[in-house]
Length: 154
Image 1: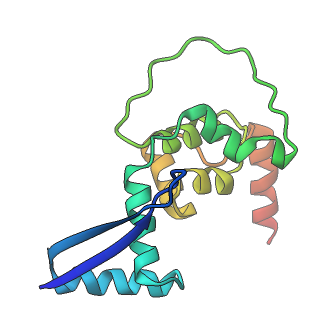
Image 2: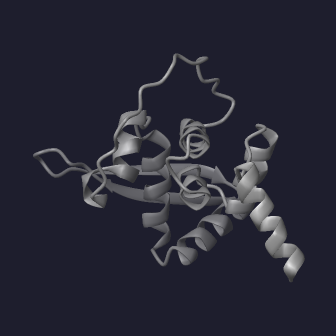
């Protein structure tokens, strides 16, 4: 067993240094922390601080998430279409996956952007879309005929 001791700075007016001692950590856990720190090119203490901050961070609100990916810094003004009411979202998946699926299904973002928003790879995201019954490519009949004619000419 290993002992991990961290110093954590407070953001209060008076600069305090709090210490956190975690006893009885498995050696394997320490090794995984070392690997993560090396992958992120930071000291292990910084990696643990990042993990703890992420674990206790407040939940992101959907509006804030939309601004993060589509806000002013990207130079995009979203025109929100009028829509009919819909079934409430189920939360079997995280809200960012639900948002990505919805935006993609409505044709507002590409599959690549949606996969990034959902924090998935494109293959994983397209498989998720398939499971949801959402077409990845949406051809009109005329577009489909043109594509088939082109493929047959090869």
